[in-house]
Image (cartoon, rainbow, N blue to C red; front, side):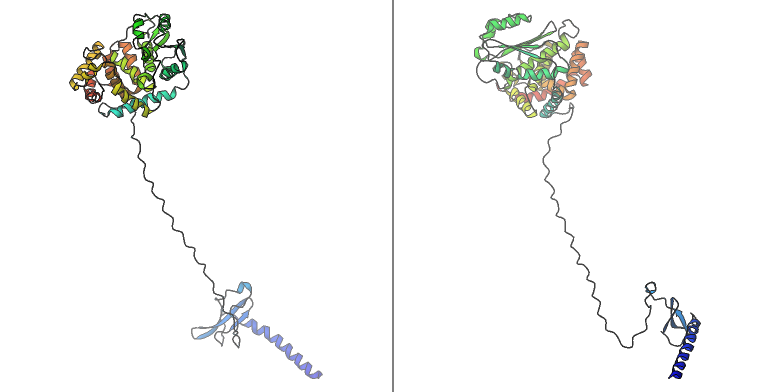
Length: 426
């Protein structure tokens, strides 16, 4: 027994000595006998492969597990081991991209006609001319938020003050509108009374240097009774602005013929300041009535209007009804052609009225002035008044400001007056 153990131990010692020597002898490039066989040599795995006619040990380059310490090409098991089929990777079902709902194209809303800043003399659209003129007026009106000038309302003992305040609404707006040009240090006195309060009104006239006879006297003041609607304005001594009116004691006063009146008269006060009293002493205006009355009517209607729509409505009403003259005068101008209108405009500018229709300077004058304001704006018309005061030659000033002679201007506007007067109510 002892002898057998010695022999077995001796044999094991011999094997342990031989094995390291045998492993150390194998290296890449050495001959090998069994193709496909692998051997582990240090950290490398060699595989027996055919190279030319010889079989040699070569590094196994297909291993992907050397870093983890797993065998690159483990020896095949003598009996196949059943392995569970790998669970197939389920590809995620792609989420369908939602098709965007098309945004409906909005139906374009009709846009308002673009209003230019200024007209040209080739623009024959009279309504467009009025819109341009209103635009220029309203631009200044929107700036007139804090006027320095003040109004002092005086009324007769019998006169309804709330009615009087309604009557002077256009005066309030007109005073604010002109405040950048004329801002008197003294209050603007507005004296209103009914027709049966003549004595009170006569006293107001005398306070401001007006001769009662020049104002029509008592008979003239009382002529229209409860339907009275007349008045005037003055810049007394060049320093004291005064407006007076005979107020109707019955009926509505909410129509343009009455509403424009105070604003109309205040425009005359501003004209007097710019032209008659500019030098500090009185000098008769060089502007014909066609322009002074025409501009007073334009600014009176505009100051009675709160927006463009109201302005066009009021202007249209004034075209149809607002004519200072009788049936004969109205019927006369409805027959005029363009040549007759050219003549009438020139006669009015020269003589301040014509026998055929004494009140035509009011009616045609506001159409002329609205076109002038359309051409060069409110500022242009003010410059026309100022340069006329300086030169005392309104035709020269007209050409300088509007770059067209007065004669050529009348030929342009006369055809429009023919169309406008067709709608005048006799």
